[in-house]
Image 1: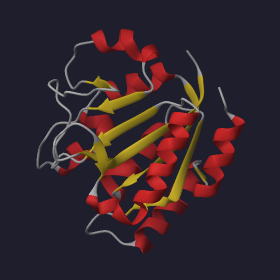
Image 2: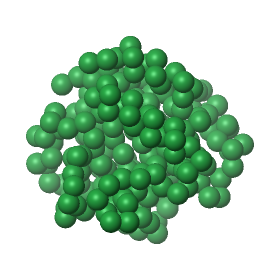
Image 3: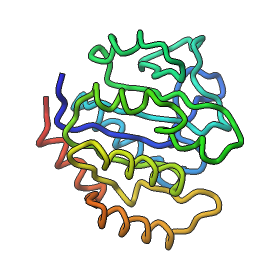
Length: 196
């Protein structure tokens, strides 16, 4: 199956206290309204959403009571691949560790790249929580093997030890590598052009 656009949300979500529904991570509370709006847009056009969650937070295990997503596991088990075309939301499982590099989802879970390839989208739009080992890692990894990578600076929140100035520096770096900066307002227009 082919999708014109797909979205990658890096660590903006976490499980609610009851572990049933998803809510915005406290770190992104300043943009939670925009995030809920973009999630609505994604659902409205049935575009794929790949997401990861902070390893220090609850993560949706196999015992989740409510599942509207496909878990992309850490293991070498490949059964999940047969189900990719049945889903629009994909949770990328990640090892829980203090190793900062394990935050890099393409390294922590080697199935991440297979998931992106199976979704088969020409254009990926990235946003999320944390820059260096999170959003930066996702954007630079995607640039290696997908046609178009876009990012939304307004929906990228620097991590606890990062600054907005560092974010702007990374934005320039991503553009130099071929990624395309877009505004939050552009997302509505892009989605309208890709109605399924």
